[in-house]
Amino acid sequence: MTVVQESWGTRLSDAVRCALREQNFARALQLANQGDGHSRDLAQEFAFMLRGLFGTLGVLFPLLERCASELASDERAAAAAERSDVLQALCRGLQETAPPQPSAPAALAALCARAQARLLADQRGRADAVIAALERADAPTALTQLDEKDAAYRAPHDALVRFMAQSFAWVHKHFGEAGLTRFHLETAEGQRAGFLKWERLSPAEFAATTAFLLKQHLGQVRVHEGAETFTIEQSPCGSGGRLLQQGAYHGPGALPYATGPAPLTFGRAKLPVYCTHCAIWNGLATLRWFGRAQWVFDDAARPDGGCRLQIYKTHSTPEDYVRMLTVGTE
Image (cartoon, rainbow, N blue to C red):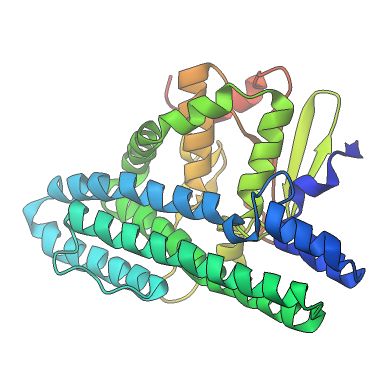
């Protein structure tokens, strides 16, 4: 296999860093102001992911509220306290004050809208500072500010990912594997319009879009083209893989593993609870909607945090993978 479009897996900020290492300030400025054909400009480098994560929370909140209403009366107080703790952790990560009624979807939506607007504005301000340093040909300052810009994004990104993982864990604890599978299918349904847009792309366009999405998790992404597939390798995956690297599944407050074989686990014996959404959203749900899994994982959730998926050029799905995604559902 040969590497296609080396830039597909390269974040815009890293392309600016590369130009600076070459002392090419004109190129660095062009990238920061005009983007690289993937990100529009440095200010909007992570806008797609931030809007996507906050949009996902907008789907999760009412579903979590409904799940809470379905609990037995003797479970509700403890479950509500668990959800409150998770929400408080999210608010700390976003540097927001928790709403007085944390279970109210409207209050949570307002919190997310406020946080998203503030984070996007912060990224723009930090990008402007990088550009000012580039215009002065001040490479050390520009590099420092690029690092600070990444760090200012990483903290809320990680808080949002952790909230999703803990929410999945909460559903898994109270409703089991079957309940979490239903929850993921309903969450996917709430985002179906986005998957439909992906379905209309050519395989190459979809591979480029997938790489653009995944690299905003701040992992390392590489894309290879073979005769039948585009292979996307993450080492590590910047969301679920980084949770594994950080020890989130061990010790006090550890996240759980879902057990299988089941669609939730790619037919495996177990899978980290955060990673189960990939099996359902990008696998079982798209298989039911479009007759194929949009992402075919052949090496998911490795202990080192790495992950590999395939995008088939023929818009097909191997039969053995279909069996893994549908095990126990026949």
